[in-house]
Length: 68
Image (cartoon, rainbow, N blue to C red):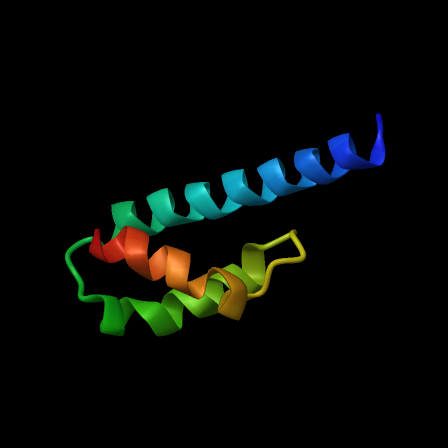
């Protein structure tokens, strides 16, 4: 694989992990407001994430997916 292909593959894996996280979060906490969920979501992300993405890097995406 070329460097571009490896980077694309890594990016795709990170996107899939974040999307799966959002889906799981919505399943278990959909009845709560984002402000109530966010601290728990941040903690959960820090415990399960195996990607290089940090909470500040994905927070806005998760929030938008939650609200939208």
